[in-house]
Each structure stands twice: as structure tokens, then as C-alpha cells.
Length: 339
Figure 1: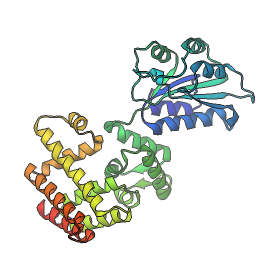
Figure 2: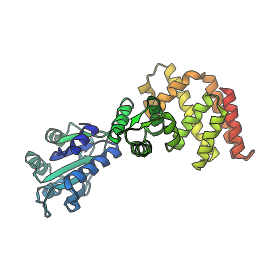
Figure 3: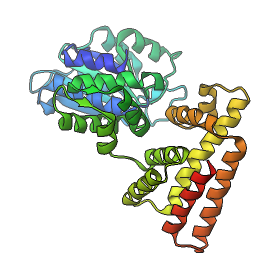
Figure 4: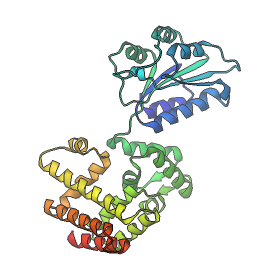
């Protein structure tokens, strides 16, 4: 089951007796735990138990789930770090007795909700305990959103906030926030308050109000260079200064972007597809997507020349041959002239 599907069920108060939640997207894991806490306990925090399965054997967790809640109502038992589901389990000072868990899964307590969390990208599905859990629990996968699913995720958030997003505004969210879902939700919530219920977020509103990160600003800076827009480039540079970014660090940001474009171009010429390029370079999928859309505007020689100019400017700054801010502005001028 996907994160979106289980969240919809929990919001409808359709609560399963036992969950197995695994994946590496911490934002999803935290949201599910928060929503379950709200729905299951309804304010009765005394009925919440949290365990670390690297410190506590599963049999103790099961015993707690079987024990009737002292304060009435329902209990929520969250057991984190189910490392025994990994291909290579961690060495612990005790052994988990899975016979207790197997017995409990056959007849879970009606007054308890047991949540097992494995914060890992994959679990070893060949293990007996993994097969047992997949057969007898509600399994939720919480891995990072794939690039092709990001727009659906943004739409889902927008619908829940009762706002609309203009078609040309999606690119702003994807380029600025795709790597941080928590920040994406926070920024969308902020914009929803700005436009009001049933309001529309335009590209102009998104560009003006979204909190830019240094990495996303470097993407915009590259765009300004490609567009040969010195005024825009200087404006973005001033934004980076407000973020307390040093000119030398800004050169590093630009170098990373242009180096990615160059590497993507070289790999594309070798016949690599986007997924292969992303795996080879190791950057976020959206960064590779943008790099591939930009590489067509440069020859390899031009990209190598840009990298040389960045290197020279870096040396000038580090050797103190010119005031850093002036050197960076001259660099922007040179890059724009070179494109």
C-alpha cells in the first residue's frame, strides 16, 4: 500500500490492527505515526508506547500489545528500527522470539494497534518473518517519491488545501522543493494562506513567495546565464548573499551545476538513458532532468571553457587578487558573454 492510500484510510478512521511500515522517506514515516496517534488515541497519550527494536525484544512489545489499556480506550504501540527485516540483521545483545509475534498476528488484540517500522529502502522478503508480516499485516511502503509521481503528490496536497496551481507554476515547486517533501508541504500551506480557499497559485506568486534554497538558487542562476540575462543573474546573486552564501561557495554551486550538465552530456553521447545517467552521477532525478534539458544548449568545448572560467575565478578569490564580490560579478558577466 502506498503512503497516500494509507493516509486516506487512517483519515477515514479505517485503522488496521497491525501495520508494517518500511521505507527511507522520513517525512512519510513521521506523518503516518502522527496521524495514527491522533486517530487511535484521541488525546489519550497515556495509551501510547514507543519501543526501539534494537533495544527491546519483540516478545516484550507483543506482551504490551496484549495487555489491556489501563486508561481504557485503544492502545497504540510503535516499534521502531525493525532491523531484523534487513538482508543482514544487526547484531543485538538479545534474540527476538518471533513465535510471540506469529501468535499475536493470528489473533491481534482488538484494543491495540501495533505498528512495526523499518526505516530502510528495502526489506529482505525472503525471510520467514518478512513473509509472515506481509501476509498478516497492512504493509505500507514509504520510499521517496519518484520524479514521475511528484506532480500527483503536489496535486494531492493542493486538493487537501483547497487551492489550485497554475500549470506554469509546477516547475517552480519541482525545481525548488522536490528534494524536500516536508518543505514542499510547508511552502504550499503558506501559499494556501496567501491565496485563500479556492485561490490559485500562479508562477509569479510562487517565484515571489517560495523560500529559495541555495541549491535551487544556483539552478536559477544557471538559467539566467543561459538566458544571457545579467540583471536577473545579479538579482539571484544578491538573494544568495542574503542567505549568507560566500562568493567562493557560490562558485562551487555553479561549478556543481555546470559539471553535472557536462557529465550528463558526455554520458548521453555514450548512449546512456536518463535513469542510467542519474545512477552514474548520483544526483537527484530532477537535477538530471534539468541538466539534460540544458546540455543541448552547449557544446562540450563551451562547457569546458565555463568550467575553466569558474576555476580561474575561484583561484583569484582565494589568492586575494580581487575583492570577492566584484570578482563574482565579473565572473557572471564573463559567463554570460561565453554562452
